[in-house]
Length: 529
Image (cartoon, rainbow, N blue to C red):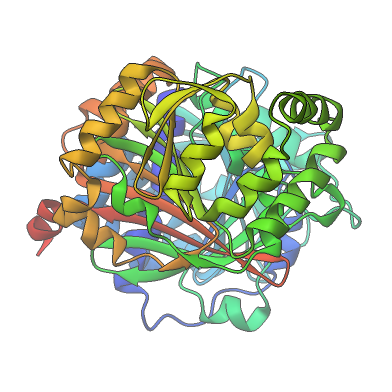
């Protein structure tokens, strides 16, 4: 089941990518988006919306990239479902041109599965499915069922040896799934007018959009829990703690899958760390230029006003119950040094800091400072120095109380100051490793692929997540559920055809403008031409 789920998640992205080529002149999508999405249970983490047009499905067998991502077996299953049911001439007139919604949900068996939801045009009677099944060589058997008093259908597809459940939810809205549990949940679900599960596009925006991706960040952590055996993995960790909703529209590029749109923060629960950055203006991202060539994943934070950030961070500590511990630590430092360390540090803080994880499981904090000489002098008062440029902090959790959650992994770190950068690591060996990288300029930006990838991203942002898929594989092998990581690693061709994934958040009107980019490897793009 987990193998099918990771393929499904990849399918959501791949579907968007291949759709665009055929949909540039598509008519506006079907109406009733709001009504249909209210019928989708609110424990969905992701919903992908696209138009159910006949030309869309022709891509399944003809596009080699699509097949390489989801695998031949899954492609054959979808193709069978399409020919037997979705594009059946007796059904086509009712569903052609309607929007289809694919949503991802948890199950009681600690798995994930999907629900497909759509609407039909007026005049459709679901009993036509029974008549179709009676046609010679139909390829499937339909059994009417009652689900909590509602009419449903159990469709057994002979070639797949699988049951697909379809439910009429009223108002010509239909839900379907290979999971009986999810169909039951879908029927029993009652949407609340007071609870907004997903943020919708305006009618005009939806009409002009090729396809849309809706994200409920409140459910994304649960999604990760089902994919990773290591529940403490820190990939997108601060993003998974965000309380908010994203609505992203698909943009076409030949070499990349790109979405952009808005992330709306839940202001009533705005205690997540990322909410601190809605009060900052976007800044240019420069620290990425000194990321190691072995970088697996990273998160880069940009500050237009470090003093304002420090003030907001203090409020965040207070709201989350850290004030007492923070004050005790800073008071101990003041008693020892006679200085207000946090105030002095904030004056030297520049506009960016980042946390980087390499393929060798090394972790570095890279903090931009205004004056490397002054920061060395300041750190010397609270550290045991190894030489004039490096040492180890004498106090636990100080990085956390200076910059917040992302620095919490550096409890009592070693540090080195190189030019106007403060580098933190949890061991002296890691620190020496970064110093060697810096001296020999072994940076990620020496790669042509990295620079091509960067050209697709916005120059200014406040939070920028990046995952190099090749370099991240050793970490996925360790932390992901084994069957999923093996599929990602061994499918040939497969996800190795992609270079990197980026998610950028840029403050806008107390929320975030959001960019998502998944770029192909250069050689993969060349093969497609």
